[in-house]
Image (cartoon, rainbow, N blue to C red; front, side, top):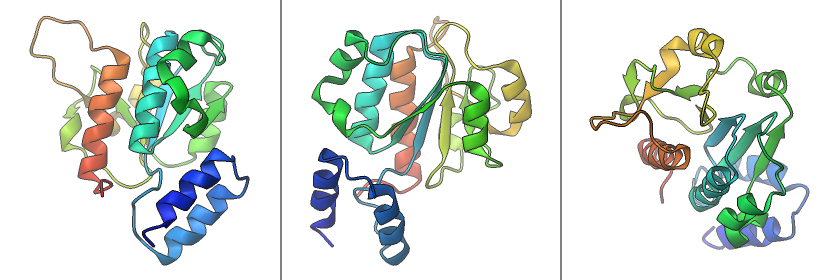
Amino acid sequence: MACFPLLLRVLRWFNFPWLDLILLFWRGFFPCRTGFPMLNIALFQPEIPPNTGNIARQCVGMQARLHLIGPLGFGISDKAVKRAGLDYWPHLQLVQHPNPPAFLDWLGPRPPWLITKHGATRYDRAAWRDEDVLLFGSETRGLPPEWRQRWADHCLYIPMPGPVRSYNLSNAVALVLAQASLAAGLFP
């Protein structure tokens, strides 16, 4: 079993088409969490390419999937995105949703965790689990009010004791993703 993460990296490198099916099969027999992407980071209409690139790099490092909900404020082939993601971009598990309804179709009935300054629960007090969806708003507009109302009991906030309006999106994702992975027991 110890060699499976190495095999996983090789299959990812060659973009093996049946990788998700193999992972589901493998996880059914061996509940070991090492080497599997467990959390989903969703960005609602991101506008700043370097933020998205840095978040992509964080997702590769933490073995999380990145969902981009369009329309985006830039092209995904933008040099700034790939420069921030460096040579990690080919290892990213990226899912692009052309618009909010496409994302909601993918999401189905499960509630995402919305990270917003309007949240009632601090981000480190959430009951994080395997395959959770962590949803972050755009840099200038945040998340749609109707989504915050729909999942009001899943709105989380990051404390800001200093005199700042908000945190940088990529820093907020890094903070919450690390805490969620730790709390869900996803670190080896």
